Length: 423
Image (tube, rainbow, N blue to C red):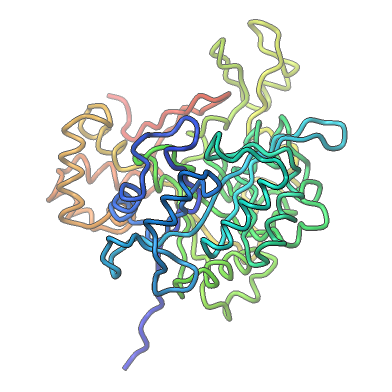
């Protein structure tokens, strides 16, 4: 009898609760659970575990799963239930090397007990954890890593949306030129970096120093609808130690260790990076969008008001790149660029993504073919057509083939994807 294939599953480890600023009031554990199953995500970050009210809900509503380091809602059926990992995004605000730094860091832990200990350690350092689900800490990114790893040596400490101008560890506004500058002596303990919506692995591959980390993709969801707009696909054992091992060996520099790992990083699902709201340079107040060459020609200033423009992710990658476009380090896992199903349906039906026709078509597809990621990546197009019509099947086919056009985002303004040619 042939051995069974190892399980393949999606993880979305960076999300938020309703206790974080600018998030949906619907972000409750039951909603996260149900939405994850609808989207096709098997392992979800809890988000915001530092917030006292949210931590109380996590403590009373989650119970250990059969798999080490994972949790399920106590009311959920264990076999189909979403697995949860304790996670939080923190905002580090400090000065280093003569510059103001604002760095977002994702922390993932294997237990409620470890989360409680981290919360206690942060409170002792003066953090007011009840203000925002994404707490602002007067600590450096390196100090946060030191604190977390002292409490839980197996913690995952990940620079979030690493290229974002304002809060990315490599961002143009308050970041560094390398992860080593940001995390100092603890850099070897940083196993992964999050690409963010405005970048993808191909952009990161141009910077050789990032070969030392795995590239993590996650949604940074502020509402149920955006869960799984980016995600990471894993293959092998379902457990916290397995997931951590997948990120440890997911770096190109550690590709030689991957075959022996119990869990491997298979690939990632990505937003089209041009759709991200910081992809290009620009000044949103005056509708000015610039490529790196256009910004350079304008001296980095808005042609309308003369103020400095926000330097976006593409320009920042160009500044730090030591490899040409198209370079790929040996052993780097791949990725797929997708468009959320509601956007595909809206484009095919000629309506808004929130329209009732989109909701109805989505329900038919999921009932017939499974979860959203399965529909977008592997469902036979003939079956998609039978459930939702030829135009929808054509749209999904175009997304899979990368046959889309994107008006790029800039300075906090999301880009726009056009799936079908005009006319």
